[in-house]
Figure 1 (cartoon, rainbow, N blue to C red):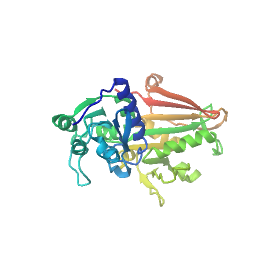
Figure 2: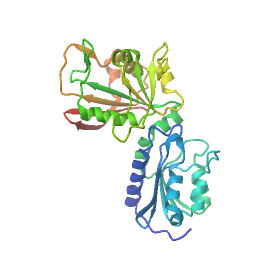
Figure 3: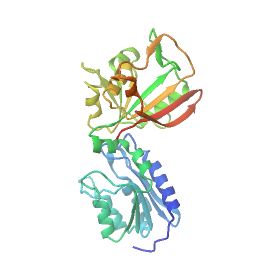
Figure 4: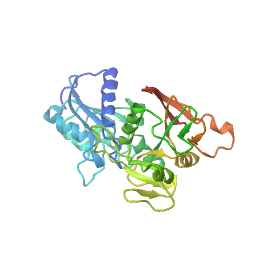
Length: 331
């Protein structure tokens, strides 16, 4: 396979981190395939890089190998997920392509839970004489492809709930006025989050009151167009897809990352169903007083049930507003 230059664990972690960062360029556009990042490294230099393209093809490894060309022989490939090993009419397996390219070593973040690959890619690489290291950057890789993993393990999308509130937990004045509670920086961040999701959901009340477009209004992201879901037991207007319940929305085909954006009713329904995995809480330094609360009944039987459910994983300032990110604590 060629000369294999020794690489330190620190180098492995650094290159894997770069591959995982690359993977996020495809997030929200690759379902039902995972958003994967890959890099081909030789003698300390990147000679190929790739991320999974829209609709899942080509895969990240294929893009990186094509870019590296003949220089890939004897190099190291970093990939955030085990290379696919199952035959598809859409192209050769990444495992076969890696072997053919003459890669000397493969570093993998996560083993692929898809039963069509699950360990078979690793076994095929090792049988071909390729050195394989696994579990490098596993936690970061897991967070980067939460939607795919949720679909594999739970049969549903990974759900993010976005709330933009005043300090006293209001999302609007009592007369319904809600534009704008947060400032430009927070709203821009919200648009970045939209771009990272396959679909965005609002409730009927939000649609009727605000007629939201739910598009991504940021330069360079104009081509991002998440599916628009409407939580309703009735019909949806043109350009929207009606879903009758949080469970139906979370299981919607082709949606691995779902963001719930609008309405206390929709937010409460998803929390009541325990389908929120991640919470984005944008808080503006304002007090509204009497107004519309961010949440209604979320099904708590006692105050004790509210504790221990959420773990804060990030806090940052966005202009004068504060963003707190929480993840649901699950067994």
